[in-house]
Image 1 (cartoon, rainbow, N blue to C red):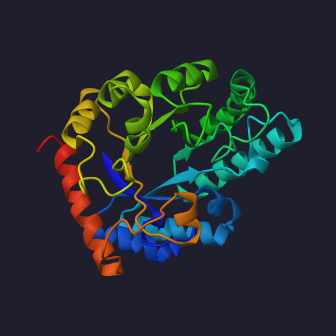
Image 2: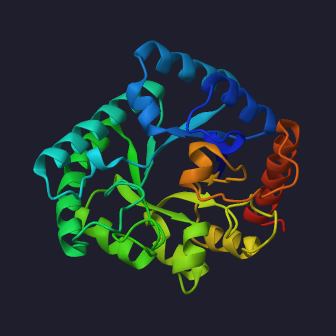
Length: 293
């Protein structure tokens, strides 16, 4: 398994100095940095190549995380918005090829987070519309040898895919080897009857994995999740892809607002202490997931 972290861990805004963050992740011992898809969408080729070169120099690879805005909603009833969404993701895929990244993940089938105050939560229609769009995107992903992992979210963030069983049915209707699923312990803790069995049921369809406590703290920080059992389930299916931490500890800013961090999650939020927290968590997760707990 390759171990990584989400780029926004150290701040409370959806932006960062990626060159600096690559080096910080490498110094801690990560193999991978998960970056923002919308950032990559807007990057100039020169900046993409600069990031690629820094990653290669430090032994860091990249996954690309998308929480699309409503203007790119692949499940929209508006055909113009769906077309806009397809074009958005096609550009991201081509920029990923330039970066050398082979994994696009996130809430790809609609937008994030879903507005539950819209008048019509038509799940069947959302499936049909988004599946049609992802089939088209999947063709380009196949051509570029990139994998799209659709994230299974909890009921408070989406209504389209909320457990592993639904996600497997969804990707089977797409029918592409380059479209698979992402499971996240935070979301599974809410939605799955048995998260370990969900991982085993995902099997080869599991393309990416997010790790976090039930309150989005770092793995091992409070052990609300049975991490040794998660690791055993991953080993049972011979999972050998990315395991990415997606922790959110800081209040304030756009990250604090969007991730609903309404109170300090830790007492010490100095940058040096944040480094220590995540270094300790990485060591803990490797022990659990590599079978040495």
